[in-house]
Image (cartoon, rainbow over all chains, first blue to last red; front, top):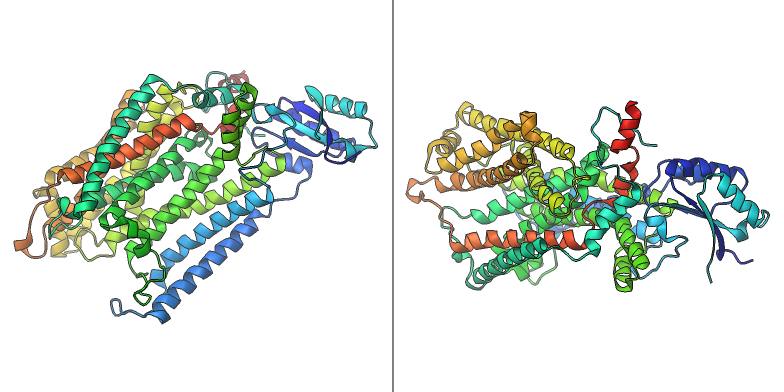
Amino acid sequence: MDADKNFIVGVFDDEEVLLTGIEKVRGNGVKIHEVYSPFPVHGIDDALGYKRSRLPIAAFLFGMTGTSIALTMQIWMLGYDWPMIIGGKNFASLPPFIPVTFELTVLLSALGMVGTFFIVSDMKPYKWPRQFDIRSTDDKHIMAIDLAKNQSIDKTVLGKILKDAGASEVNEKNFE
Amino acid sequence: MQVSSSIRDPLITGGKTVKDVSHDISRHVENKPANLWYLAMAISVSLLAYGLYCVWMVLWNGIGMWGLNKTVGWAWDITNFVWWVGIGHAGTLISAILLLFRQKWRMSINRAAEAMTIFAVICAASFPLIHMGRLWLGFYWALPLPNAFGSLWVNFNSPLLWDVFAISTYFTVSLVFWYIGLIPDFAVIRDRAVVQGNNLRAAIYNALSFGWQGGAKTWMRYESVALILAGLSTPLVLSVHTIVSMDFATSVIPGWHTTIFPPYFVAGAIFSGFAMVLTLLIVTRRVFKLEDYITIYHIELMNIIIIVTGSIVGIAYITELFIAWYSGVEYEGYAFYNRVSGPYAWAYWSMMTCNVISPQLFWVKKIRTSIVATFVLSIVVNIGMWFERFVIIVTSLHRDYVPSSWTMFHPTMYDIGEYLFTFGLFFTAFFLFAKFFPVINMAEVKSIVKSSSEKTNQDASH
């Protein structure tokens, strides 16, 4: 059986049932492919055993890039390339350079982080997502289980585990 | 799990379910707009067209078309610029600062408030660009790009240049923040379009949603992105109006050369921004029948912020007057004496009445929970905040150091026309947004439907 093709899908109506349901399903040794929700459910990342996102690190690094670019640019332009006497002050004095440095730090940090988010989450305008259940953006929480990765457990048993965990419906979904 | 105290008023009324949220918000995008919407669009587009004519005349003939003279070299253009930038601040405050403080009442109003921010910043930016005379060269002149004069670089010591960076960063980051919030909601409309069999709409909204799927891992990253954007936007929004105030505060003009300008401008910005959010949302909730999502409780909370920021602004006015006297500087003293009792005293006292006295009415619970009173006062506050900038700018300039240069400022139809242009632009953009984009953040509201609805609160009190 090929991986990522044949799924069994549990539909949950309520986020609290879902959270306890995830623990029950994983407690039975089932590997969950992913859970799709219409809104962020708090605690779901712990329940699924996901590690914390490293996007804050990306944001920090992009921000530092912005700081360095801004300071280098301003000191080089006004301090070395074309020094100008403004109010008899030093050519390259730090305090007036702070506002632009701050703004570029924020700008690069925000754009860099959001760009990274799109790339790591594989989001792009021309991509049509593979939907396990069309209601997952409306009001249902959808738990997808890859049959190929859970071959030790029988399909009917998987369905029963999902029902016991609180799923209101259990469907099969096959992608070509 | 989210818990809210049973003594708090519910944030969502009418016993809504998660499915109701999708339906109530998406149907405005899916259905044909009401006749009222066409009427509102017609008025906005006419204003925009007339405004564009005035802008064209100014660009063709030069800014001599404005009422500026040798003494008053800055007047309506910069007044309108500061006014619009200030209005934008409420959107970021609601979406970023209230997110950091975990204020759930932001969720019904943040989408429209952020849209307002973006359109207000566009309106604001149009004034300095037009003031350059040749706005198509604006980017070339204002950004540090290599040029044929040396390169002669821009002056990083100038607060006007800081403004260029502040406003463009603010615009970009606000746009990104707003768009990130829209992505899951575009996916809701896409999936509803698939069910309804509308393939074109499904394709458009899928592209807009970047193929959003809503997996737990993506949501986790998404929340992390939203939190950091909020953390970045908070100092950013404070920096923007600080830098705008430095356009004045770093000069040596009596009446401008004031160290309290940054906090005073930021408070004033939030004050006027909340007033504009109220003006827009009171109309939006009525037209789109969103009374269950934007409740009287939301309006009351916004009115409380208006009391707080309005009082800060009032204290700042009084502090300015006191320091002008207490410092013993004649020029400073005269600038304020002239504001209070000179030829522009009518503008000063309009400002005082609208900004200091009128928000104090909100101490009365009956007034701050009344839709009509809030709507009227929100417009009064924005008139007052326009006068504040006019008073600061024009009254400080019109009495020059040399009495032979003393003069008055009289706006021409092009000053007025360009102000109307920004109104046309702002409302056209806002009505388009209200038609084609979900006006309430569905994903966020869905996450609190269960914990903060009327029904849950009733259950808790039993």
